[in-house]
Image (tube, rainbow, N blue to C red; front, top):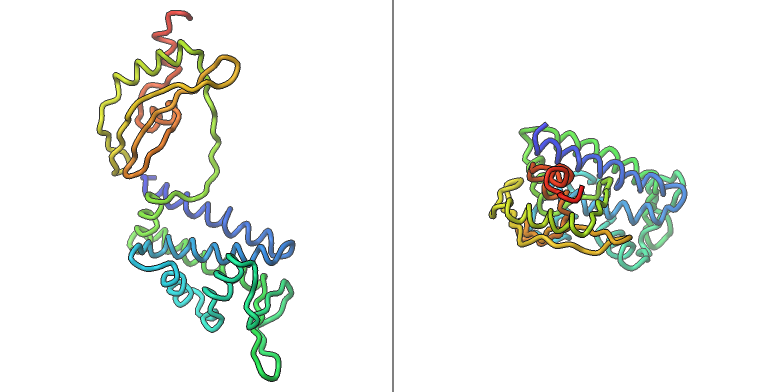
Length: 249
């Protein structure tokens, strides 16, 4: 797999396991939460499908509904679900939400009430996501590149097993001295410029220290641990350096 394939797989896993998975988890337990998460998922999907920084959130949300969920157009989900429910924890009097197996309904003499079910919305979003996954996997589909570009500018939730590596103070100083001289700026990483401004240590637990790098990656500032940085750059591991150079061992 190349970098683009790995990015697409990370996007798909996040959308299925976390975003849609959370909707499914709450359909029967907490249907209001399922509706809120459904609207958040529509926002997220529209940003990755279109990656349109020229349009407003409202425009991309409605564009997504029109293309993928046209049956919901009359319900004006941007106003009645996204704005009122997500941001105001309320709902328009023109719409009813339920966790029961009810279809769309029009009831009442003077006004129409649209009934949306949590199960139905989950089922519709699941089918839409399957379609989008196929589009993201298609090398010739422009939406694949839209998703990759969005990911590089705005990461997506994923599972990371993060290990904090602590060092004795003299070990921290040795690593800072060694890698400060070794790393040359600027560095091209994932098609962006990565600049290392400096390395520093921070007190941790039991007289041990963490070592961080102060970096700029593209237009964003970050402070990864030194082990994350040198792994990304393909440099010798910190443990290997200490085994070679630590005179106290």
